[in-house]
Every structure is written in C-alpha cells, then in structure tokens.
Length: 235
Image (cartoon, rainbow, N blue to C red; front, top):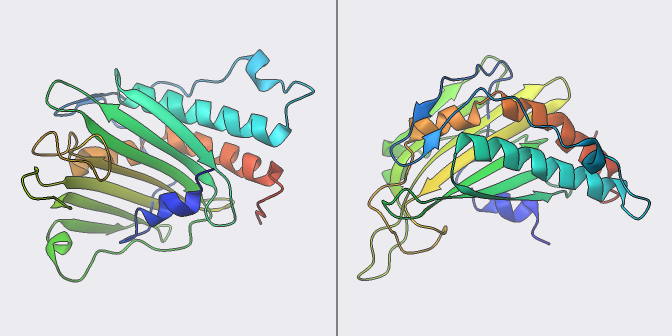
C-alpha cells in the first residue's frame, strides 16, 4: 500500500501548510476548472458510519476519511475526476488525492494532500529557477503559506516542457501541526508529457484551495483514524 512517506517525498523541495483561522474564499472561475467554495462538508450516511461486525474500526475510519476528502475536492473542482488514498504511518498520517481536470485544453493533474503532525517548515530555495517564482508568507501561529509559480520540470527531447505550480500550507490546531498541499501540473501525470503549455491553476488559485476552511474539518478525522491504527502512534 502506498504510504504517506512516498507522498511527502514527491514534495521534496519543501514541506507544507497554514492558518487555523482560514477564511472561506468566494467561488472563482479558474482558467481551466470551475472552483467553488462554501458548501458544507458532506457527512456519510448513518449506514456508512456504522461498522459491520466484519469491518475493522480503523479501516472504517479510513474509508470515511477518504470519502470526506473526495467530497471536498469534487466540490472545489466540479466536473473533475477525483480519487483519494488515506495513508497512515509513522511519518505523516493523512490523505492524498488526485484530481484529473479536462476542460478541453488538455487533461491535467492536480495533487492534493492533507497531513497531520508536520513539523518541517516550508522554505523557498535560495537560488535557481524555483527561487524566482517562490513566495513565502509567515503566519501568526508560526506556520507558513508557500506558493510556487509555474516552474519547469522534466522534458524528453521533442516533448512539451513539464510545468507545475503549487501551494503548501502549514498551520496548527489545538492538537498540533497539520498541512494542506496542492500541486497542479500541465500533464495528466506527475512525470507525463505535457498536454498543455501551463498548469490549469495558478499559484494564487491553488492557495485558495489549501486555505479552504473545509479542510480544517477533516483534521480531527485524520487524527481519529491514525489513533485507531495499530501502526501509528499519535501523541
């Protein structure tokens, strides 16, 4: 099973997230995807919440966590295909989501992540191409909101240059640090050939995604699921 360790490794040049007093933004029309905010977090039905005798409570909690996260992402990116994976291990328990946007301009991937107990601060590189479009905002709680403008990634000869943009938010609740991340690519996979010149969302639009207040409501579910797992120790 894919672990959060792997998900975190894909964000190697930074860490993550931001502000407990996240204000819900008004809905915006992204260049290639309809983004909306303000809908309440969808709660699974009573049948979905009640574990059967054969269902492990931790597995049930993880399944509900994935469903919560998918509901939020599906509302933020209306009409997009959304999938989720909740990985609970000793590094950063959390949920990773993939969002495939296809607006007619070329299918594109957006990676989302929500993690708890993230104690590594975000920081922009000191030099190089990433430094030119990286912005870091220090938050009152000691966390950070980092955004990365469209930057070049890998490209084989004859292929369109891979480009990505991202936002990483690290903040605290009364139980500790958590983070929300969003990275948009100009390709349908992280290392695939570009299908469009630019990612479907700008860094500023991705910052709206990570600051959406509905992610805060998922944090207790991550902590609960991690606490139920025999593989995770949560202080």
